[in-house]
Length: 281
Image (cartoon, rainbow, N blue to C red; front, side, top):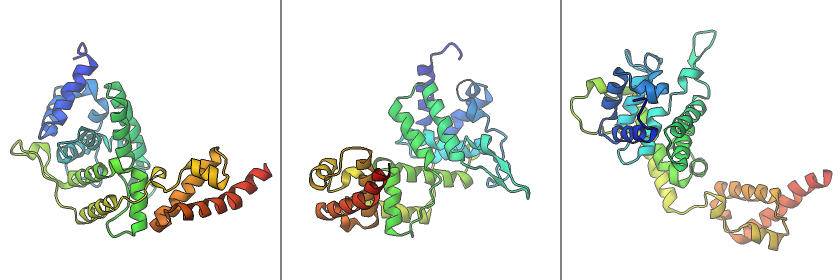
């Protein structure tokens, strides 16, 4: 194994991830000592217990089960599911009253996943997506939240990644209670259980995406050139602040996304909030 190229190892690893039950190949690789050679961070999860896990199931089992439940069509989501909690081994904290927590484990996991992707020579865009999904997997938005909250959630995650993030969340929840690799009786792909609140959120997000609502600066009915020419706002760092302010206003109220309204809003914001600071300096 030590004499095999990183690219070959990555390609064989991908084949395991794309199999109906990745947990089988990964468990065998760990038993043989192969996993430690190219993915020691995952091997370190073996024997690491969590209070939220069923008895006799450690973090290693949870991650393998999550990977099994992740959609078969997306390698990024499958790898994110496999690595989304690996940072827990470095962030475990116990309070004075014995309460266990893993502060900011998603950030540590995302960073570790990036290092793994770079080590295995995955493309930069692939690494960035895996990192992004893991960073956001602890989201608190629910299907019954306000339209404003859902718009902000989609804006923060991005149109291209939001549905994959929901798939990752589904596999994470399923991986806490679903059958693990040593209990699986056949090689068919696992079907993630229905999570009502997550399905409701997925429907809300789907409708929002169909509405073509403004979710990014590029969706605004205005741009930097218009702000410069019609509102006299200089092309500088302040311009970005104005555009971000306008996006926040439109996320709060989509009806504000018209050139006339945005120009008025931008002019007032620049005059009242930014100019006084520039004059003070």
